[in-house]
Image (cartoon, rainbow, N blue to C red; front, side):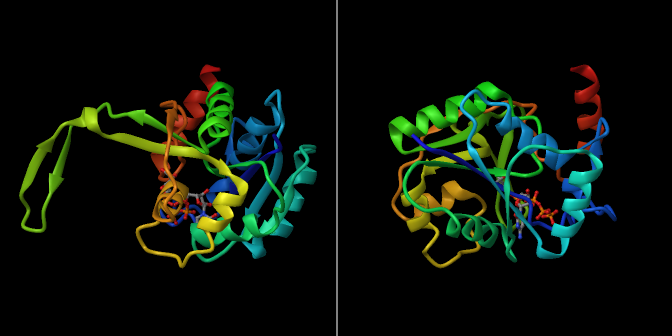
Length: 223
Ligand SMILES: Nc1ccn([C@@H]2O[C@H](COP(=O)(O)OP(=O)(O)OP(=O)(O)O)[C@@H](O)[C@H]2O)c(=O)n1
Ligand SMILES: C[C@](O)(CO)[C@H](O)COP(=O)(O)O
């Protein structure tokens, strides 16, 4: 079955607060976004890669490609005002059937076996959403400052990639955007789709705040 990887890097990185958008920050001398793209390009069954970037960053991305002699084939599309809009813009460029993995451009360390398992599961069940068990305890809070312990065994931390049948995901993304859509699974589910979870990895972090860069550098050094 035809495989696509839609990598979304259209965000502003406000929580990172760096002058350079976080997807372009280097870890071990290589921009995060190149690491993310190459995680898919290094798979045995290489997907067709589509990258959503803010329009005003596309020329800079081309300069980085030259500077780093980055050879991995991919198609660039314009990002949108929200993650939902960036995914939608990417999906609009894709036609026909197959599977599409939507992945955050700032998750550069997704292991190959996690990617492979996600595509294989989605081929069987129609969806695969990568997730990990919680390591910490959790509490539910209410608006009055009260909190209550919850059973962490009943929760998962959701990562990307999130893989779906292309036609079904395009249909799901045709619905109006809602503020509760934090990922593709929530969009798919709101459209009536059933979610299958697959095993993620603790190193599959989303680089979001400055301390994530410290982990990222240390992780790369450990390889
Ligand atoms: N308009 C947007 C917003 C987010 N994303 C992407 O969605 C992923 C997860 O988002 P997040 O980590 O929140 O990135 P930012 O939105 O850039 O960060 P922040 O929320 O701190 O501004 C990132 O790869 C980001 O580039 C996107 O493609 N288009
Ligand atoms: C898609 C995601 O990475 C799954 O964990 C997450 O929901 C993105 O959230 P953000 O608010 O855009 O950081």
